[in-house]
Length: 365
Image 1: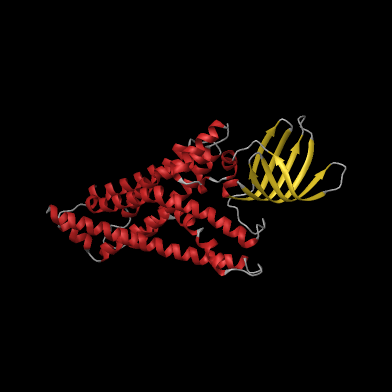
Image 2: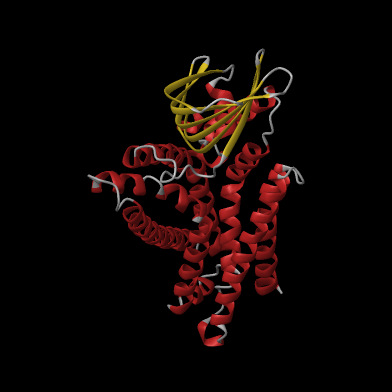
């Protein structure tokens, strides 16, 4: 009996893995196609447009998009997998072999957990790096035109203070996690807080001790604007401090998040976004397992009993509500109204307990 149960468990686990991968690949291809069409539309006016460069800029951005919808891939894959088992009467065979629902759900739980570990430790760093490469390709494609390049979450602000006064920097988009900026506007003030200059620049690059502003126009009180091919703005900011201000948490690889959190704390900056992202990535394996429990609670009903469509719709609705809960807790955490640990783990507990209690009621009364 143990040998038979082991074979059935491996079969269920492999079928679940194949279904989830099939759903993920299908969504990946759909997102890549739609994003490529949108990129081609935006680049239609670019002279000497390179189709290969457009494809790279689009394809390198897709992994981060699909990373966000991975829990729904697991939810849909698990529901589809267990509904197929039920339709083919394989669940009846498993029960006849002496297996309970908990026994043929456990392989999917283990696979989902391992998928979450892989997504956090391997897929996330790769998607973060590819996202930065995508920004570089867009900058190359559009000639660093700030109106065309999507910076991912802009505009961005950072303040720097030196002995000669203060400067506030605004950028419409950023590349290389803040080291390169486009669509830059700088406001400078003297030590007394009086306005000195406004500088508008097409792009800015951080070099040791200075911001290099390219194609700059300098505005001062009671003088005409001055156009300069390059303007140097002194700064005491380091690349690490700039990345803290301009890099969105989603573009920071998992393994580098602890360093970003430490840098933010040492600089006296708010690190709520990075803390939340780190906790979300830590909770991802458990979140995917919770999605399996939620899917199983609405997918184990036998077809001959009817009502399968309502159960499936209730599972989709539960996943949507869980997504809303996750977004609400994220916003509360970023506004420092909720601790990042609570914001990241509350959806996991809500989804997992809901699925567990529903299964417990269905299987054990």
